[in-house]
Image (cartoon, rainbow, N blue to C red; front, side, top):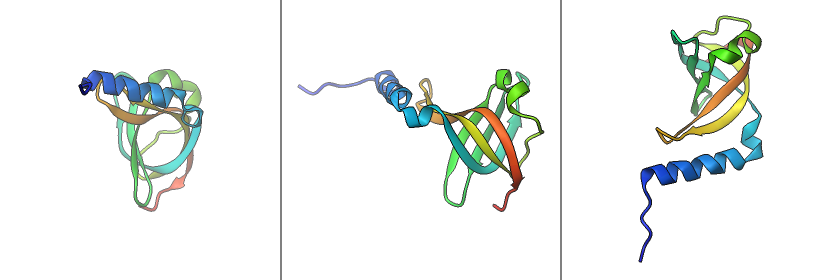
Length: 108
């Protein structure tokens, strides 16, 4: 008989795979900022993009004091240090930013 998995089980399994991949635990990514939103909680939600791809990202308020020393905005080219993880509830992977450095104005 075939084993039928729940959505929660699969999301949890994928979460564990991401957590066990050392390359995703501390990674530098370069991209252009889009959809940048400063939330009232202090968190920043944004998308990193390049010529053909996009990746959702978040910087929690606890990292902002030491990890961000400028006001990030649409079109900024940045280098982000963080970890790629799965948000289990939504089954969505994203970059969890710990530090963001401004590189210059984006081209996209």
